[in-house]
Amino acid sequence: MMKIDDQLISRLENLARLQLSATEKEGLKTDLTNILGMVEKLQKLDVEDVEPLVYLNEAVNRQREDVINNQVDREAALRNAPDQDGTFFRVPKVIDL
Image 1 (spheres, rainbow, N blue to C red):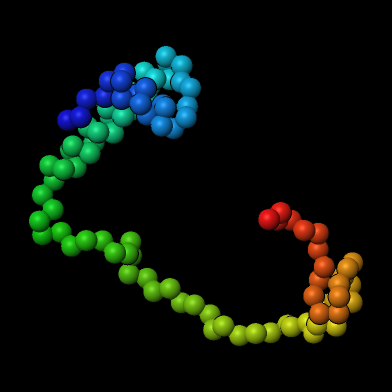
Image 2 (spheres, helix red, strand yellow; image 1 turned 180 degrees about the vertical axis):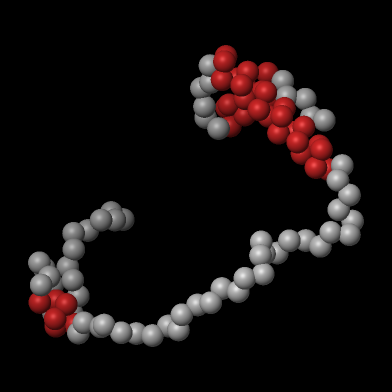
């Protein structure tokens, strides 16, 4: 099993751009050790005859038909626009290239 030491915690702290207290570092070390222990237990399981899981259940996703309805024509949509040019809505520039 991989050893979780102070050097690894410091490297992870640096990579994640975190500043952890000593208590947080110890808690992280404990959590990572527990996670690796759980993964090690999972690796011992015999999954030779287990089919990979694709879906969690056998339910079929029933999708509705894609139907266009309740359309507003361009003139009606632009009628209430605070600023428009006859074809499009005019809005303040939000991306500065």
